[in-house]
Length: 224
Length: 356
Image 1 (tube, rainbow over the protein chains, first blue to last red):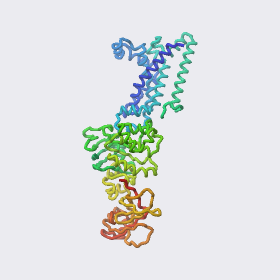
Image 2: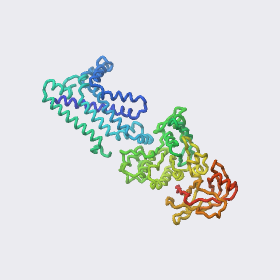
Image 3: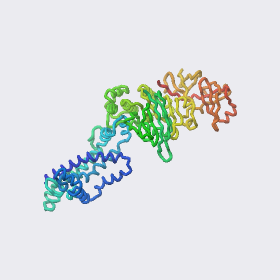
Image 4: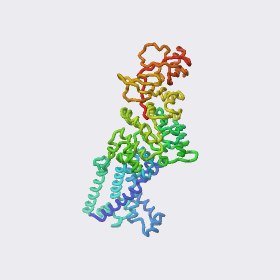
């Protein structure tokens, strides 16, 4: 089993999930509560990775972060490094690729919070930001957990985008799925089988936990 | 200090319905009622005052401070208005305990005082889902008052309760509102609730405030037919409970004595006797024997024809309004100053206890 690749994938998935929680919650809040008519456009953009082939997404990300693009040039100036074929570039691609897996369940959970509770909080003199923190988030923990778990699992199994943006550099961009592909190419079915089984088990456990959370099989969140 | 609320607003809610209301609540009205049939726009007006719904046009001013003025581009957020809002279903935070709900936006001292005032000590660690409707109402009221609002807005505060609890809670709510010293505006479509809770009331019909004034006055002298239809009770008479016997209550109203059915809701002391004008019959011959329990001598002060019906105003030592058909008013040749007898069935007298 390629432990280096497994460890890299876990690091990538954890970092992606953390960033998505920070970025995705405000986006989900905006989608759930904004009265703007054109928010369906933002919804469509966020959901694009669900239907777009990973290679297409990867291709555009590659163009967008390449050293000749404004973003890539700025990154180069600031850090002296390059985004394509680096862990950081891979992280950026993963965040975009897994965005809908965080935003959709979280936005659904936010939208499910009784609006009167928010209004009650405002009338008690509590600001919108504090109401978000004290009422919306605690009442949406299940949706937030689902979003985080799905994003983690999705990043763990990502292949096409990684190949396009990250390439295949051991310890830096060679993730589990790339490692499996490599093993099969090298006709090393034993290694490929072991890593695949690992990914299968992890994915199954993650999904089982997610569905259990949704169906309230366990009282995971005491007091709900 | 109870400041006057002045609110004018226009808000188009649908193609067919527009709220176009002007409401002025006088300084010193402790509990004001916003009364009207469902769909009249009462709750929307309350939300406009609280800042939860934005009016298309208008102005809201409370205690000399402008909360909203479309002409000057002023629109304070609900947080800045500090108008406590009691939602119909109370909107308690389900993830917080009773104590956490009450203390949500209050100082520890204020929260502790409210927990005591509303006798919530035993429920402190319960979740809202684990307490009764009446208890939820107390928690919601405690939560709103703990935040020390300048004005309290209550949207149908009793409608989520079952009939028995509602009756019990009614008096308690009035006492609480008076004791808090915070002026309150209560939305209700229940006329008995309006009489039991309010000092002052405004009647809304079809998105407009049609009439406002002291509660008894509005009931006695509806400004127009729509108001009369919605208030439905023209006679709201201050009464003293004088005795109770065999399922009947004896009331002293002015100089007269009325008998009504003892519903068990009123205890001792004072109450309002509410009688619809159409339940008051007028006869010339007081000796006519009928099953009617109450006969009161009086003098006609006015006869106003309203199409098929005539409104007969009597002075029986207290003002009493009767609604008879124009035909019988004509046959009886009722004229101002004539002595007649008013007949009221005991079952037509509805008693609402007063709370001070």
